[in-house]
Length: 346
Length: 246
Image (cartoon, rainbow over all chains, first blue to last red; front, top):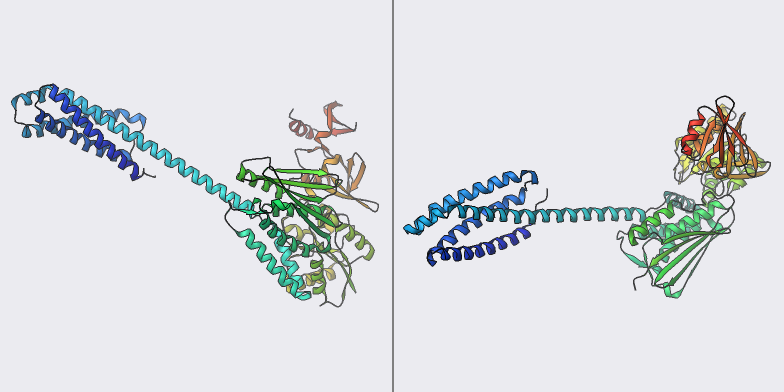
């Protein structure tokens, strides 16, 4: 259980003190109206209300940790009445010591029902204010906690989606390196370095971080270089971009899975050389990047075009932008085109 | 001289196997292939004693390639990451090597093959026809051989299947093809929401059905878009009805 912060209880204390002062003034005026001397009125009001304020303060503290449910309101009512009675007994005992006046003693006795009833109302009011404030406070904290939990889940999901590195890629790259160590050690060393740089790029944790298209393409180039070593002459890549989009922002590591999907699709669907073409352009403050790969329309079983790679991209875009229309695929004779749109905030 | 063929779409992966094979002067590499189609051709041409076979390859994967070979040679699978149960390899391969593999592990696989090949003539892939679908591709399509052509048939294009002795006859718009598999294999491989086994010997695609008519005493037949009539058994009828939402 989480208790309301001390901040709201400090505010409540200030409000209680202010209310006590107001009640002291009101009661003084009423007593003067009834013919009690000004001095006696002030003493009576001060004692009565300070005592009430102390009671309200402790009551508030109790309510901070224990709030009766609506079904137990009846008991609260009884308690309130009891406390009011006790309160009257206490002032009825104290006041005669301070005010030695026979007519005042009679007045005190005569006014007892009104005083108990007023005390009942004031304690009830204090309890109600405390109850409302603390309930509201608790609800707000619950909501805050829920929001934090939701953000954590979202971040975790985004992180997971982003670093979905296909084990196939990793193990096959390691296999290529293993093969190169004997025949071409220099190339093996370079591939180890490229793989390390690429992995480092995928391990960054700040999800909200947007990088420039240029930075994203650098990381992509590392990935493509590794894939070219793996597949040799079969894989060719071409990157075209308008000069204007170099500085456009893009969520980190968004393009790599799209290109990986295109390569997989292209390489496993045909036996010929494969050209993967990436083109980027910026229009109306939207960066749009298309990735093209060949495929065989006769035998392709991935006609639906949403392999795992693409569905996770689509999910990521939704989590980041709250939109479902940013990823699009189309087939054109024997090319498959994946287009992703990134809204720019400039 | 022992003849081997290496089938892998990554040239460096083939290089490594060749390099490891240098230690075995009695083994010669008869061929190197970058995909399953080339693999089938090379195997027919050289009749190798052993093949090294990658699983994920262009067009047809390693499992699908093996299905087309009769008899299939002894196989050592080489694969990077096993999404499909590794156990599946045990059923019909001498061994499997997880890339990247060491020379020691490779030697062990060769020894295993030597031991098995001296024991019996063809240990390799005899149970393959009974094997269940393993790879993701095998759940979406079937690969058949017609003469010298290899045809990849996506399940979507199949109207119905008919058991025919040791074979299954695959009926599509473009004609029918034979595949040496059991009808239960297809029942396992296909999406049960789209393909229903309506009879001991028949599986049909639900979207192909235009009407269902009573037939003889208490039987039924399904009439497909192509006009073909498919018998429905007593156990098949409720299955088909529930999928059609009747």
